[in-house]
Image (cartoon, rainbow, N blue to C red):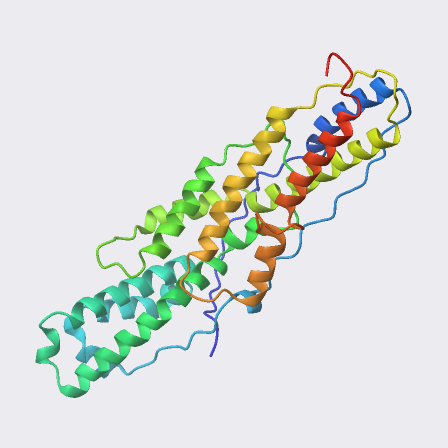
Length: 328
């Protein structure tokens, strides 16, 4: 058994990555205000770690047996309207099609076989060809969920979303994520309706949504932004804890709306990403499960989302030591 091994060439695009210095700017401004208020030296900062590597291709994909048959046997099922489809799949362009197009091909083939099996066509077939139609339909039905998984998790548009070579976002200038959410929702729809005979897939819309995901490694950016924000809040909390004084000290206002905006955007995005993974009616590969739990989870205590929530609460406690300030 082999993975579908598709090779294609795409033009290089510039990812919409934020400048790492821009991401630090809001925190530097806040630190300067803290240093001025306490007048007791600079805030010591530490660099957050990088996000984990996305599972390798071998670890995240499923092995799927190739389906082979003679031209005569395929031709015997010509009334099922599959001969031209299979021919297109086996021509030069079909052999180098990207994972998304392989997904569309397999789903179309499954639809035509299933519709054929419920039509009058089988009555005109020999018993041998009726059995061949049934076996082929059963095989494609069993394979389709694995094909849909591989199509997503073998696509550059999806895997590049977890690129470690990415930057944190600037919390006071968060990007709109609605186009990216719409793209993931369309993939969710394709997975949810893959066994529907009525839901019609749209090749151009699928490619449009994948191109939206290609525009920036949003998952990686969100994770790195959460981790940077957690580290910077922890740095500020440690500074406040070490320099706490009974004297009245007026601290600068913490930027609650922007911290909340990061929280909301990251939560929306991680919910969508987890939903796409969990929507597949198959057992997720172990290494993908481990990555999901460690990096994408909204519940695991060591995942970036919960670490950020904890950092916010810790900083609130650190600031509470100065709550006697009237301007606080």
